[in-house]
Length: 447
Image 1 (cartoon, helix red, strand yellow):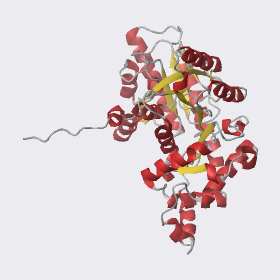
Image 2 (image 1 turned 90 degrees about the vertical axis):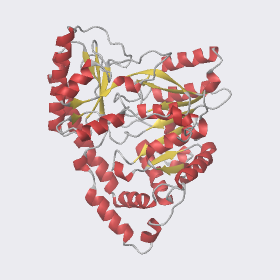
Image 3 (image 1 turned 180 degrees about the vertical axis):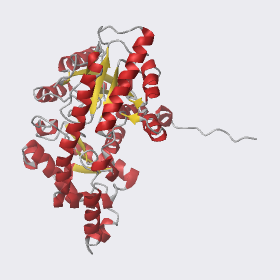
Image 4 (image 1 turned 135 degrees about the horizontal axis):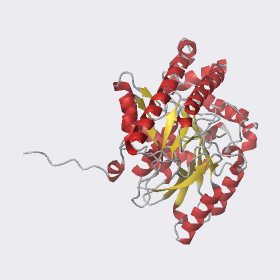
C-alpha cells in the first residue's frame, strides 16, 4: 500500500523554476553551442591571483585567520559594511553623513538575490501589488509570484521608466481603490536587465516625488537594484536614487560584488531604511545566521589592497570592447534586414533586440532555428508577466555579451542572422511593420 501524498505549502506550489536555468544547462550540455543568453561574466578576467593573495593574507594572519573561519554576525562584517558606505559615497560624490547613513544601515547578503527574497518576505502578502519595469528582471518575477502578489508592469524606453505611464497606472489603481495595495516599486536603474537602458537623470527626482505623492496611507518603498552600476562604459555616472533619499526613508539600495568582481564570492549588500533593517535581519538569521564570513574578510582585504577597484576598472574596457563587437556585428548582419532594432547600452551586459514580424518566444520558430544554427538567446517574453491571461509581448530577445569571447559574439550574431533569414524565408514575413512591444528603440542603435 502506497503512503499518502506529501502536501506542499501554497507558497511552494506558487514557486517555479527560473527559465534561465534551462538555457544555462543547454549551453553546458551542447558542445559548440554559443550562448548569448545567460548573464554570466567573462571567465578570463576573474581575479584568481588577487583572491588567492587576499586569502593567504587573511588566513595566515594569526588574528584575522581564525576570525574569518569563525561564525560572523547576521548583519555582516563591520569593516566591509564601512567600505560599502565609502564606495557608495565615492560614486555619488557625497559623504554617508549627508545621506543620513551609517554602517548600521548596511546589511551584507548572500548575493543581491537573497536581499530581494528577504524584502519580499518582510513586506509582501498575497494580494499586494508590486510595480516593476516592463520588461524587467525576470528572476525577481519568480520571487514575487511565489509570494502570491500582483505584479504590474510600467513601460520603459531609452530613458528608463516612463513616468507619465507610472502616474497614470497609479491614478487608475486609486480610482479602483487598489492603490493602498502597492507595497514596492522595483527598478534596475543602471543599464537595465534586460534592455540595457538607464533611468535618465531628470527622471530620478521625479520618480521619488511620484512615489512620495502616492504613499498616502502606507509608505511605498523603491527597490533600486544597482547590480550593473559599476560596469559603466561611457558617459558620466548618475546619482543614485538612494542619494536623493536624504532621510533614508524611501529607497532600498541593492548592490553586489558579483558583476564588478567575482560572482563565485556570492556577496551582495543593501542599504536599508531603519524600519525594515531589523525585520530583514530577523529573517536572515532564520535563513543562515549570516552570509559566508570568510568571503566577507576576503572582499574587505581586496578593497583595502585596491584590488577590487582595479578589477572593476579592468572590466570596463573589456566589456566595452565586447559590447562594441556585438553592436558592430548586429549592424553588419541584422542591420541589413527590415524591421529589426536594438538598444545601445552605456554599460552592463545586455542588448535588447526587437523584431517587427518574428515571434521570439521559447516555442517560436526563431528560437528553434537559432538552436539549430548553434546559438542561444533569452526570449523577451520572459521579462514580462501576462496580464489577464494574455500572452506577454513576444517580439524581442535579450542578448548577453558577458561570457562569450569577441569571436564567439561575432559568430553567434551571424548564426542568429542565418536563423532570422531561414524563418523569414519559410514564413514569407519580412516587412518593417510596427513592433508590438513598448520597449523598442528606434531603428539601429540608440544611446
